[in-house]
Amino acid sequence: NAGVTQTPKFRILKIGQSMTLQCTQDMNHNYMYWYRQDPGMGLKLIYYSVGAGITDKGEVPNGYNVSRSTTEDFPLRLELAAPSQTSVYFCASSGPNPRDHSGNTIYFGEGSWLTVV
Amino acid sequence: RKEVEQDPGPFNVPEGATVAFNCTYSNSASQSFFWYRQDCRKEPKLLMSVYSSGNEDGRFTAQLNRASQYISLLIRDSKLSDSATYLCVVIDTGGFKTIFGAGTRLFVKA
Image (cartoon, each protein chain N blue to C red):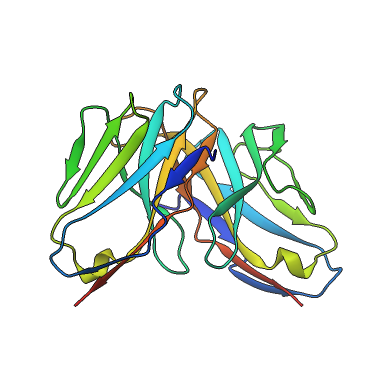
C-alpha cells in the first residue's frame, strides 16, 4: 500500500546549501512529476519524466535538477538553496485508473516541507 | 487564457447545503478529467473521475460537457468534513500532461 513515498518530510536549509528530495513509487508508473506549492497557491510543475532516462522541464525548473535512472525513483535536487525555494514539494506518479482502468490517474506523495533560512 | 480555470471561491455554505463548482478547460483535445480534494497541509487526493455520461459517488456528482469545455462538481447535503480545496484536473492527449486548476476553497459551517 506504499504508493508514492517522499523523504524527508521536513527540512530546514541554510541559504546556499544543497539537498536532494527523494521520491519512489511502487506502482510501476512511467510518468512521474515534481510540484511545488506555495502557501495559499496552486501546484506548479517543476520537472516531469515520462520514463527511465527521460526528464523534462515544467513551468518552474530554475534552481532544481532531476534524474530518472530507474522507473521507481525520481529524486529532486536543489542546488544553492534560496529563500524563494521555501515551499511544500509534492512528488507524484501517474498510471491507469485502478477503478476503471481508463486514462491516467495521478497519485501524490505526502509532501516535503522545505524552509530556506 | 489559462489552460484550466476554476471558480475563485471561497464558498461558505451551511451544513446540509448543496454547492456546485465549475471548471473550464481550453484544449478541446483533452482526454481525461478529474476532481481532486486537498485538505490543509496535505497532498491532493483523487475524489472522482469525470465522464461524459456524468457520474455519481454518494453525495458527489460530476459532469463533463465537451461541447462547452467545462466540468462541474455538485456536492449535496454538505458536511463539515467536506471543507477543503477542490482541484479540477485535466489530462491532455498523450496521457501525461496533467494540468491542475488553482483550486476552489469550500468552507462548510455548522
